[in-house]
Image (cartoon, rainbow, N blue to C red; front, side, top):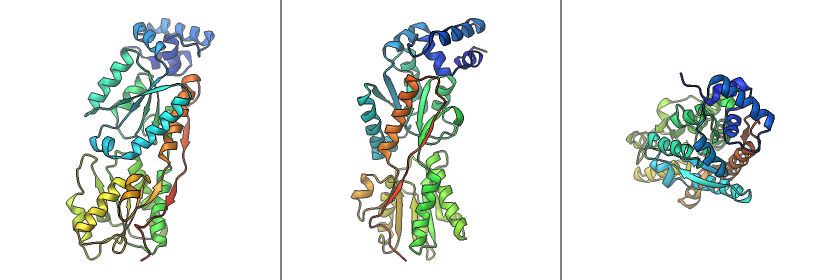
Length: 339
């Protein structure tokens, strides 16, 4: 089995990013630590790619921003643009540059990342998403590359820098808001469970039901694959039932707008017939008719905090991984009414 950076880090008693920076002769690493790492390399017979290391040492102030592999998420959801704006606002002040990375498939995105690492363009990354069984996260971790994540880490949680919203609490509070308006038949629309923010919000929705002793009807919850172009037919079927939900918690504004459109197609009016609360407080929430009540998760601050943490760890490579929770708030508009 080939020796990896993590093997060297374990023997030297340092982090993998410290080994990576030692290979580049980064001045942020003390000479004493460098000697310890080099001794571990010699003991294990580890041979770094010095050509890539020397290139990377010249471009170490570039951070790769990894977008999720999803055509709709990237080009139709302003949430990501707001996060990137927050990241760049911090990076510009501290004289770091960023580069965007994505692909039509995970393998395509991985090829871009591998090429950037191999040619020394960057070895530090921010993932603008979090999902289960993600090969890109696996690659970054196993190669000992420094990365931060926007969203709760599912894999390697104790070794991952991440910035997140308390999505469970936010989902619970969104459902509670509808409950206080008198709604008792509350539905949920979200993405598939591999996207952790959506599964956490659904769990918060369920907790609010348990807290108030409300029955959880399985057919009131609809999960949508992020590749779908429109709402599934089972939503229209649900909205046409006499016992349909009177309100929905929807996991982002994009789906909230799609739900409003589906309501019109079914002859329902928002909020007279159906109340909607969504997440992200994006332009979608503000420009639709009626404007959506939405949970503001402070996406620009999420981005700025991720940039703060990745740069802090780039400049202080022996720091333990940090976890930051950014607060959220409900922005009340016209898509909800008492029942």
